[in-house]
Length: 402
Image (tube, rainbow, N blue to C red; front, side):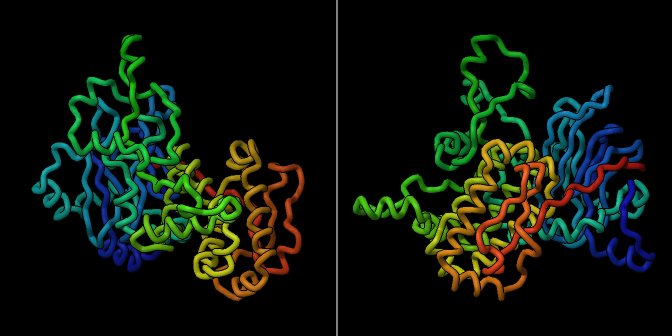
């Protein structure tokens, strides 16, 4: 295990005593293990990660076969407390981590003897901590709990059930399956990668396991108030401020912070968790925020924070990420042009936002490889609202050596 940052012994002792611990028992050698912005392959003595900063983190893993091919990625968010010890063991049958068989007594014993396994724990990579904070600073623990799947696992492939499996589910789980609106933004792209061998008849009755679906907030399909005139309906479909306001007042306990937190949650689940449905939700929410002319003029705090969120997301995204996906329908070009056009109609709001910190720097330059030329919005620099060019974002996935 290699961390790029160097620290003296005193600093290491302070981080050890103040940080949290993730202990993973019986993990096979060469398994892909990751936390936040870095991933590695486990060595023969690997038992987990130490010195984890308190707060929100994303842990993920993939089994690797004899030829070095990794299985689809699985992960989960966890909000670590100071000096917390989180213990899981590897389930070889399901190629997954589990807390089955992990008793409170076992956790207490491991926590009390954590220094005995110090050399078998990899240090948290502090060199990428600022990047992780910039991508997740609006995600609260309560929002994390609300958005995570009911089964607490985020998988990069759609989980499927047969009708017989559904019959054995609890009432609460079935209720969540019936409430389709709860999972708006989650597309149906079924994969049989994790489904056991089924007969042709069984395959005809496969259903999506919504207990394994991220519980994204549904964007209202009705974009205007009841009783609106035809002209008002047209106006509300062009300016989505009513839709945005409805979500802020009716869907989020913490308003603006939770809405931006979901934008970040969706982005991280796609960029690091490899969940395509999360990318779909991210696109919908970014489009919504960029299509609210009235809100841009009045919700200054929201849009100052949103520009910062979008800036860091684009800054830490690999170039080929947008070449492969966004360029298919030029989503980013259309969305940013729409955003800056709305800002042009609200020059006063733009001047106000430019005085706020933090703000994106430099220029609007979606990478030339995506569009073949630089994309600018007319007079966008006059409003002082700029988005940086893309940079290679994911840290190099080097070998984990323990």
